[in-house]
Length: 303
Image (cartoon, rainbow, N blue to C red; front, top):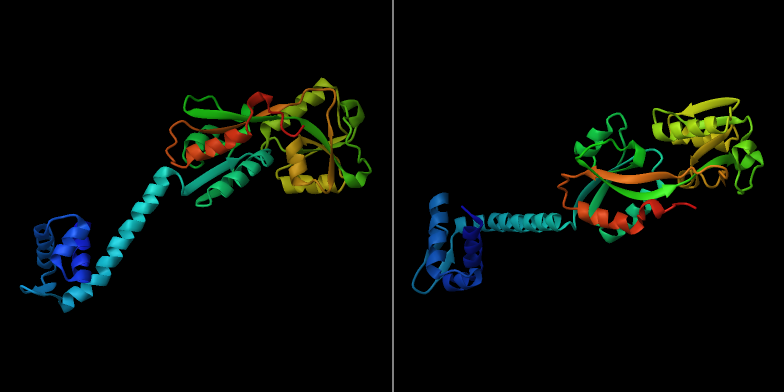
C-alpha cells in the first residue's frame, strides 16, 4: 500500500467516478483501476461495486475512507513540517551561555524570536568543565562565552560578538551613587565580592591580575557560585564587585550603580562558538541574526 493508492481510492470514493479520479490524480483510468484492485486484494474485500453506468462504494469502502483520509492528511502535515525544518522556518535551537554572558544574547534572542516564532529556543547554562565537548558534542547548538574560554580545536567555529569593559559595582544604599570613572586608588581596602573561579574562571583571573597590577589588597574577598547571591550581597552593601558592565546593568540596575575603571584597559572579548559540523537547519538564520549585532573587536558593548 502506498499514498498514491490511497489518494486514488479517496478520489473514487468522493466522486464515484474512475475517470474523474484519474484526472484529479494525473494518472490514467487504468492506473486508478489497478490501484483499487491492489487495495481490494490487500484488504481482502471489495471496496466498490461497478456496472457500466454506476460506481457504488461498499460498506467496507465507507469504513476505510476516514482512515485513508487520516493517513494522507498526516503525511501531508509531515511533509510540511519537514520542509519547514529544511528551510529553517521551524525547529529548535539549544543555546548555552556562561554566567557572564547574559545581556548580549538576550537582545539577539528577542529579535530572533520575533522573526521566527515557529522556532523554539532552549536556554541552558554552559558546562565549563569540558568546554570542547560542550561546543562540539551536540548538547548545545551555540555557546556564548568569553573568547579566552574557547578551547583550541579545529572543529570549532567562532564569531566575535563584542568587547566589554569591567566596572566597579556598588550598592546604591551605600551612598556611592556617582557614575564617574574610578580607579583602583579609589577602591581602597574594601570587601571584594566576586563570582567564584569555578563559575567564571576567566573573569576571576582577570580581576586577580588587575589587583596585582595595582597592588591592591582588599580587606576580604568573598566568592559566590551564583549571580543571585552575588547581587544580593552587593545590593545589601556588603562589599564592592568588579563585573562586565552589561552584566551589572542587566542583572540589578535598580539596586546597584556602576563606575567605569579609569586607569586600566579592562575590555574583554566575547564570542559565539559552535561546531563546524553543525547540521541544524535553523543554524544559519540564528548566525545571521547574531551578526546584525556583532561588530567584532570594534564593538565596545556597553560603553
